[in-house]
Image 1: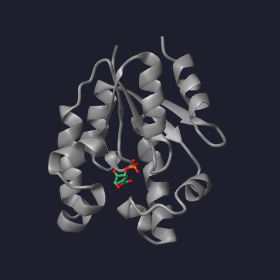
Image 2: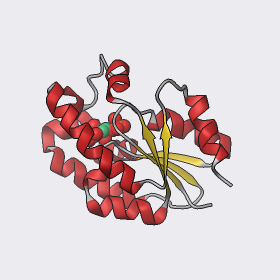
Image 3: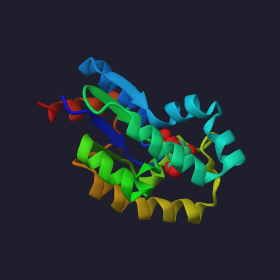
Image 4: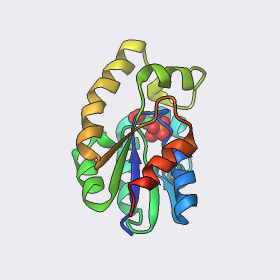
Length: 164
Ligand code: S3P
């Protein structure tokens, strides 16, 4: 089966949903951020602070293109849609699902988060990032799933209901 990839803003639940979805479908689960950490031998915050966002994005594109595209669930970092090249790759090789979560809900979920460098930016900057990326997620995805007020199991069930 063509691989499934999950896209969406930080805190939209891509990793938790991806793990449970892969489990339900008995497929492998891979996460781009995790693969970046393995390949560069640093955590994401360390990579951002030592090499900067551009190098992080280069790793992200490289890792994305190394991923299998069949019989797999791939969860991606929230900024994967920043590069046109990644958007095109995702759309061509995967069934792309956008986990759509309101910024207010994400703010509650990530209130104490220190592990995401871009989340530490100011409120206005995060809001602009959210607004701008929203269109990119929409145009890259084949399906949009609303994850507001829904737990992981409910989101997974909705995804499964649309898979044949
Ligand atoms: C990022 C999101 C993070 C991670 C990195 C950059 C972004 O992944 O890739 O901190 O640009 O939105 P999550 O979406 O899993 O938090």
